[in-house]
Each structure stands twice: as structure tokens, then as C-alpha cells.
Length: 210
Image (cartoon, rainbow, N blue to C red; front, side, top):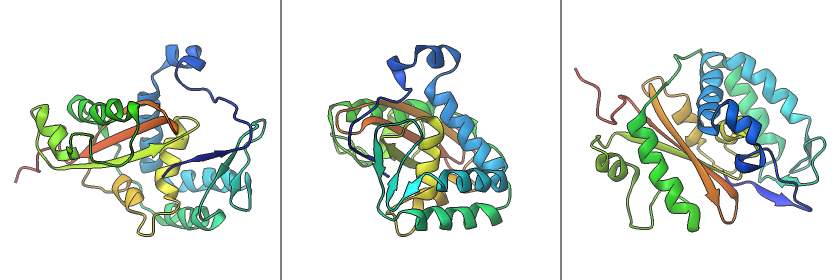
């Protein structure tokens, strides 16, 4: 999902604009923690989405105290669907951090520092290609969030999956087979921030052993 800012922009607490937060824990670590919170307690996550729903005004998200409105495609309809989904979703095991998958994700995040969106690198590489470059396998699922306001918003964007008819990003995050993940975030010239999450059945992106 891509977040579009509307009106005067207030820079949110990210990267060099929030040194205290960075000193406490990296944005990537926070994203992984937010993902595991959503996986291990989806009913509680649904309650959080209900609170998030109150920030909507039509198709705009208006966070308290922020001068920037965020434009969505579907408005609360996508949020309501995500609330219903997470409300009935069984709890899953958390994903473990995987350095190889994080390195693969970092390749794309760094590549998009000069622009571009999507899963293909500027050299035409796929998520599988990037994992193989680090000595892994090609069984990698990848999700990307553009313009998140914080770590929680990375995961929230992907679970709500506004504007994505098949909610494919949500399905990936709630796949019980995917037990490892690597996260990388960086600067994006259009959306300010890009966060990439690469997930695998194994920590090296190889298929499950029989």
C-alpha cells in the first residue's frame, strides 16, 4: 500500500527525526514486533483497528495532532473488513528474525532510495533473486509499505491492504507456513519511507525439509 499525504506535512517520528526512538530500538525491530503482535493475538489487534477506524473522515485518515491527512482508496470499508478478518483469525506462532532475509529486504530498500516502487529491483531482480545473492533459496514472500507514519503503521497498512482486491499482503502476513522474516526500511524520495519485509518458511529462504 502507498500512503498519500494531503495538506501541510508534519514529519512523523522516523529515522533522524526521532533519535531517542532509534536509540531505544531500530524501526526494523519495531516492525517485526508489531507483526508478531498481530500474528499472536489477532483479536486484540482487531480491537486496535477499531480505535484506528475513529480517525477516518470519509477516505481521509486524520491523526490527532497532525497537520497532514492521509488519503486512502477505500476508506473505512477496508478497515471494517480487516477488523472482521482479524476478529476470527486463529492465533499464529511469531516469526523469528532472519538475517539473510533482512539482507535481501535491505537490497530493495536501498535500491528504491533513488525512486521506484514494487518488487522488481532496478536491475530486474525478484525477491528470490535477491535472497539467492546472499546464499539463500528462492522461496521468499515479500511485502512492502510506502509512507508509513511509524512501525505499527507498516503492519497496519499491509493487514488492511487498502486498494488491493485480493488482500494478498494480509494473506502473506497471516500465513502459518511463513515462520521467518527480515525487515529493512529506508528513505524514499516520493513517499519519505519504504519498509520491505521478506518472509520465508526457513530462515534462509529455502523450502521446508521433509
